[in-house]
Image (cartoon, rainbow, N blue to C red; front, side, top):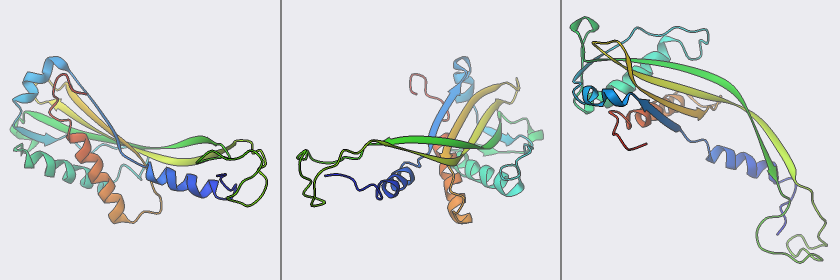
Length: 195
């Protein structure tokens, strides 16, 4: 079966949207694992500031902190005032970057076909050269940092990246942000030997 040339962009768009997952990674100081395991209380570092107001604004900041608070408190961590000498400090950063993605699509898909006849389209098969489609999109990144309350050293960092949908409603954007924070914190506290 041969893919009709006009269908290729539509199928590619559907594939891209289906692949808009949240990619998560984390890193930590192996020498701090025992210290991290003893953490019980936390406080937030001051809200970060940056030039991109799509990221650094009170709405996004409050959404990130509320999502993280919900996860941490459900695990027994207690949020305290920064003046109460918490075991660890939480911080966050974000960015939005323009990305390009190129995909080459062969004109034929599916089952083997006769080189002389294409029964799907009812005519002779014509050789089709592969076509490359380029699309531009925005990718959002959220970083969550855990800083040791005593040493003030970074001991753990989690990162989530995902394609952004500029047409998404505020509710869908918040849901994606909450999912990103949840996925990041699935890796905290770190478990040595697991990636």
